Length: 408
Length: 96
Image 1 (cartoon, each protein chain N blue to C red):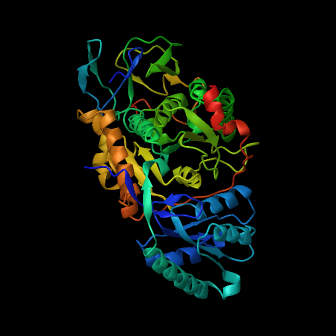
Image 2: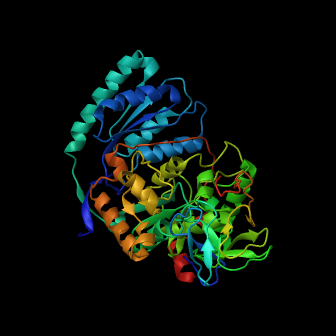
Image 3: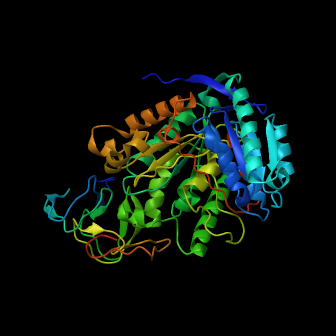
């Protein structure tokens, strides 16, 4: 199989390029969710994705997430669906999307005469956009313009043996080819602080990484238990540091260029750590109630696609960006192959090596970037979850200037 | 599978059932007493209570009791040095 090193993509006004050209239908409060879902429903596989925020009280993080996602390079047009009396500043969001050069419309259900008329108006608008997006100009895009995020879900004892280290090797190759790669899960670096910090390009950044992992440990203790589910234990993982070890291997061996938070875009190429644990006192509940929260946050940082490793067998995909599922466990792959893109468990059962699987992952990345559908895309998975959080802006040490690299 | 030379545990690369027997890495026949999924850990050597458990050469916690070679290593005999995971209980048959 030949791996495309260049493919056609959708140019955006900010200079980024999209590997998909979806219409995002965003509900601005749960009360508008049904109307948004009904608007998107008839378009099936035509690339109309529903995202949104359920809360009625305002939250800066949620507004920023929606703005980042609505102006994500994979998005070609945006329909905002508002009930009317919610607090999310819809005019600001509308203005930000308009400023990005994308077609945008806001429908306010309370002003439109209710559910039926808003659904009809929304479908008409989406239909018109799809017509426009079909003929959209495409330009060449190469691997060094690509942003790839990684996350794991439904981990078991095989995750750290096969899929996670294979993604780590794929990350090393992608970074080597000039791509930007983002890993996260500071909750799963507890016990590995010094090792993570030593990979930072500056000592100050190393301190920031150490601090973010300490915050994650503090937060998970405040919540009552760490990022650990019963399925992890059935699969043979006993302690958080053991799970950490496996999860962390997804990051590969490249130097860490910076620390970002949801909605921040990496300023350069190379490897970045995304900190998804809220700042300040533990409030708003669990930082990641499920894997899709983290997937949405990786996408908000510009990830064009996501490498998702799973041992127990997650079936999810995502709105906005394709999710490539790398299955760690050969037994799980045998049961759920229709939901999986890469069989990394074959490392345990055949003479395939980590390097072979890393090569296949890189091939998948290029194929999907060129328009090939992932298993979850083909099956219609477009999960999306967004809740309350709060973050302080990142400090200067989190994003060392390029000069700093020469000094260390 | 032994992940690193320094490790005192090995990892199952396939599921096992009670009665399954195979040779341990240091010789001797190990007979399984529980149903375990791939990815579970067995002691590779005799481990004393209080000894660190090493996986890929990295400590993943401390043994809470003496563990004989071939015995399942999990939350009944291994405790985190960071955050104890109290809600995970393993029954005598190895299931949850």
